[in-house]
Length: 286
Ligand code: SAM
Image: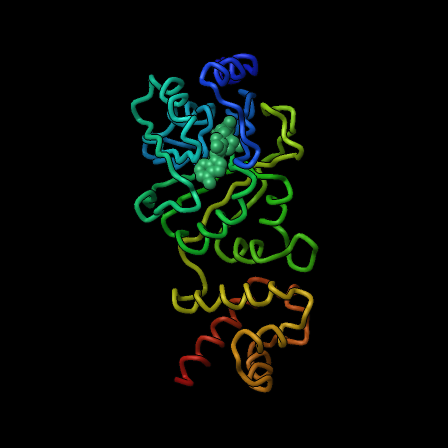
């Protein structure tokens, strides 16, 4: 068993390095070897894979990843953890730790088409990170296996219409095959968080229904609609695209979509059809 799965060892390691954990960075470390192994087995890594890990913490997941993958690059925001990681991962020469905020990282540099992102994500950045990856870097991500708060996992896979359905759900349904792999109880963390977690497995599609230029409009449409999710799609689209209502209604008719529906009831295919029509309309008018 790894020492890093023993809460009293972790506690003494942190105090030896003079570290008090910070809630704002979601510093709840996994101390259960079974769960760590389960995450790594969902990722199904081989030595041909490059792994990008966000938030290695004290290295519990990182060491498992280093044993399975060819190369592991891990971004850690808390500079105090770098000496700890130097110590706990000393025997692995295929790990690179970078002191970096994952929200500000240059993913063009970090991702290759062989990259698998594996992480126990800090709670406060899980949603924006998924959105960023799916919007900007999808094609360079082979697969993502990430532990997140259970509610975030439910939002990622939510079908249209329900309370969990939002921007992240539409974008995920449009851009990737996603499923909840398993739930994780609070008890396997040190210290214990207040919420249940879940591991999400997500594989971005290499091809989608839209061109890159049309996709920009897709994101605009989705963001506009969910900024005012209870309004009719017609009203939110009119406000966002500054086109006359009759023209938007006509586009809806061509798409076979009744735009007097609330925007939050539209599914990812309907959003994609609308994006294509808006794209053609905008480009025909200029
Ligand atoms: N991977 C470890 C594990 O499973 O035990 C730690 C996971 S812990 C939930 C989240 C880690 O992410 C912490 O080490 C925290 O310092 C780091 N972190 C928080 N915000 C971050 C950010 N914006 N960029 C990079 N790392 C971040």
